[in-house]
Image 1: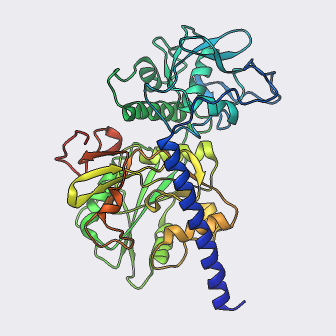
Image 2: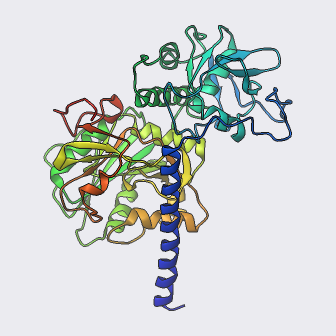
Image 3: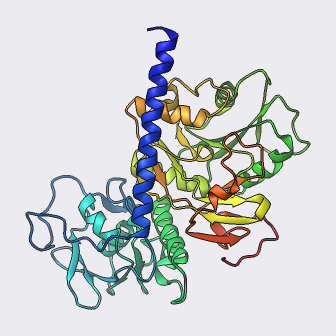
Length: 440
């Protein structure tokens, strides 16, 4: 095939990927405008949600080293989109047959299962539509295993007296408290995300020693390096290496100790510059960061945990929160999260060094290297997973962007707007220190 023919095939693949992306965004916007009702028990062969028969295979929850553990296959927040007090409420019971959640106030059984068995996709669909689930008083390792497993799904659990010792203090503190009755839906979303994050990082099997991650920052703007590196240095993730690729520019005067600086010739294109930065990195996982976007302190943890439960080739976040610098305004776009897709924000992509090598490395292109890599992933049969958007803010300046539809594009029918940044710790403090914390 000639070079022209190869380019034609590549262009056709890109057009199909972008068409799928546009259709998916229309579906997501429709779901946000017209939320689905709580789904019925989804097993057509089973007239009522009775406890299923025992599964064959090893248990996916247990106790190790005095703490509860939850395997990656046990549960996930996949499919969770809506939050708030308007979501149906339930009550969690544990009995000799297993566990069940009944609807408040009529007591109808909504979903049931057995402790130590995976929560399958159909049960997850029911849990994803529930709001708060109040837990019956109970104790012991079986109860602790169940709480940790359900906490991973993102359903908001309220357990005023959770079993101490078997659960991490961070998770216990979250289980005991709920947002105030007047809280808006985003406060409930934050509560759900904090709960599942705590359950996964303290109780996720195989995460007692999390994988080493290298954050790759390639930049031509030395004036932005100090702020970007400061946001990375503030990450709570314990195994993080910061690699700064200086793309034809001199280093700034001061960087935090341990920052790995890689001088890169200005003649290199962006893809080649990323390859050089990758060559200097030592982490098992790699995540690309941009010099002018905002990263909250839990951002890297979120990516590692999403990869843990999704098993995707690439994980990332959507550019759902956008800060419009000339207007000093943050908007939340209608995008959706916690599903497999073909698009994540380029400044949030994370994948393993091994998978990157298997894809042929970073595409040697001067721009849109993120899209080019995602196209390679999809073409090779890999998967892309978009986790929740909290902790990442896509910054739009007045000009200078490769893709620039204008600021008004981002103001079309947003979910919500804030002056400055949203008032939650997940978003960090660096980009707008004097922000007004109120919503618009």
